[in-house]
Image (cartoon, rainbow, N blue to C red; front, top):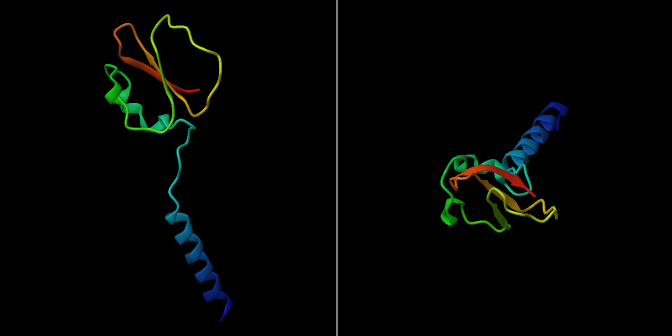
Length: 88
């Protein structure tokens, strides 16, 4: 094989591998896919099914200081609407 076709084959194989891999979540709790819930009234059905833990926090709620990166923290406002999402 000549060097040019060999290089072409390597490039094609490398790009095929790169496109076959699906990117994982950018954050440990996957909150980047949940922007649509901000401002929505809170309901257990608001979030898609998930493997990780979810902690719902209302104004004035006490919370533990343990940090679990895969846990989704749902912060609600005074009207029980989602105001913020955080991992931890």
